[in-house]
Length: 93
Image 1 (cartoon, rainbow, N blue to C red):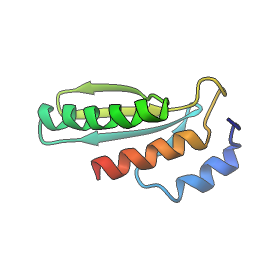
Image 2 (spheres, helix red, strand yellow; image 1 turned 120 degrees about the horizontal axis):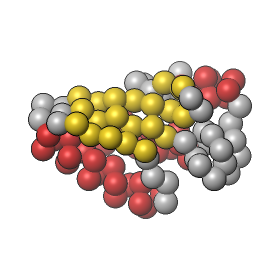
Image 3 (cartoon, rainbow, N blue to C red; image 1 turned 90 degrees about the horizontal axis):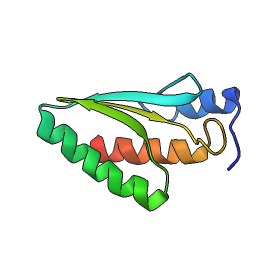
Image 4 (cartoon, rainbow, N blue to C red; image 1 turned 45 degrees about the vertical axis):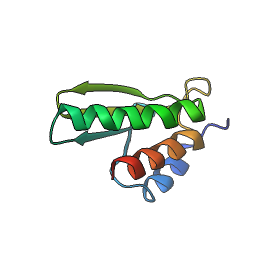
């Protein structure tokens, strides 16, 4: 896995809606109507994350889901993070 430069990350962020680059990771927050919808989204994301063997750092409080993506083995953001971010957007969108 090749670590992306900040310039590459900023460029790729223009192609994916709702994500920010901060503290060496990609971040987003989703707000749902209720806890059940938030948890359902997390479950769908979990199956895809497991398939990719690439797992998010996330937290959930009631109807809000905060997600951070970075490739720990590479020490920052890689194409894997953008792939999972796009999958998450497709699942939640």
